[in-house]
Amino acid sequence: MKLLSRRSTLGLLAVGGATAAIGGYSWSRKDLYKPTRPLAIPQLVEGSVQEGIRNFDLKLGKHVSQFVDGMDTPTFGINGPYLGPTLRFRAGSNIRLNVHNTIGQPSTLHWHGMHLPAKADGGPHQVIENGASWHPEFEVRQQASTFWYHSHMMPRTGFQVYHGLAGMIIVEDENAAGLGLPQDYGVDDVPLILQDRRFDSGGAFEYATSMQDRMMGMKGDTLLVNGTINAHFVARTNTLRLRVLNGSNSRFYTLAFSDKRQFHQIASDGGLLERPHMINSITLGPAERAELVVDVSDGRTVKLQSTTPSQGGMMGGGMMNMIMGGDEDFDVLEIRPDESRKPSISLPEKLVSLAIPDPQKAIRTRTFTLGMGMMMGGGAMTINGQSMNKSRINETVTLGTEEIWIIDNPTMMPHPFHIHDVQFRILDRNGNQPSPGERGNKDTVVVNSNERVRLLLGFSDYADPNTPYMYHCHNLEHEDAGMMGQFAVTE
Ligand code: C2O
Ligand code: CU
Ligand code: CU
Image (tube, rainbow, N blue to C red):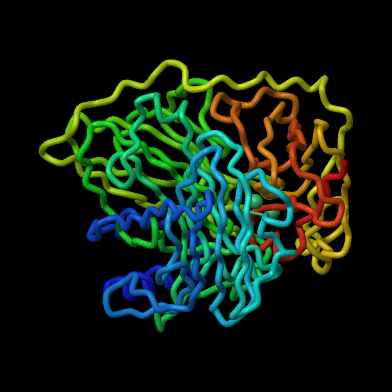
């Protein structure tokens, strides 16, 4: 079993990790990479219409997966052994999700990025007991986007997502469909769900076994893309659109191609950017998404690779990376252009019109200060000094208004901050304009150490004084440890 011997090699290296890292040595997963398996493409489902409503049936189950031949890994899955189908929603349509839980423990399913009534959100208040079902309904009132869905079962979100309770959502609209972008699912419009995992010697996922896993967030040494280890993809078109979802519990990825080729970012969390943005690398924190367009017309095999960005702070980048277990490089995907390919697509100059964010419209400013009491020994993960309490609504906002939220991170590590129900705009980071790739709609923002990020957000359509939405750090171990709060929207 190749993977096992590979892992024990890494285990030995990890034991000597302190010396190795301080000496500037870091091992590379790339050395061990053998592209062997075709990338799994989650099944695409569009639901079936009953009385004008599109119904999607989702069954959460307990399974055994074979990520490596001959090795059994107990997993959770949705309509399958690991992860769930990709749900395709059309803007303007009415959706009903029929979620049935059979995993042997309570769970929830949250529609990350979606603007919807709080009761349909699938957060910690919409628990589905084992054996029970839940049937939220809502109208899709958003533009074309890449969203996702996942368990939000406090305080077991990290465990359940790690074992497979997640999937992608693609929202389509007329504007996006008419732009000539690659949109043939699994052919030139390719989902890439990035997740790092660790296996024990019996083949089971190892989850949060150390203090470090719980404090810094769970990191793995093996990369799964759509549940595939060592994935490759055969390109049958010269232009590929990659929908990248960082579905990891806590790992950040900086993605670039092995030959440093340039590519375009066309969308962020909440849909298209105004115009394609040319880059040669992109960093995604947990739960962030980006749609990338890459040209492979030169016919050469190329690898999408990831390095973990340096996460500097008061202890210094190298030391910090060592503590966070974050220094590994991974090959994400080998792209092999087929002999015959469809011709290249040229991107339109303008993708969508977005309103210019106007901070003057905000009626109020709130500040959210992140805290990691555990770092100092004892205490918990907090926002404004408080840990999540399901029976406390921390903030009440007014329907039809806009606000500025300042996310303040005095801790030594970055936190991916996520707000339910809304898509926000980033006004600035420590007073500096966001980069072009961050000027579109977002629902998750990386707040670096010693950074204050100002967001502009509006609350529309849905009010419910009794059912809150969540805001939280999307490092799932931090979220489960209490770095989460609740806001209600009232009329
Ligand atoms: Cu992706 Cu509160 O969740
Ligand atoms: Cu969410
Ligand atoms: Cu965090």
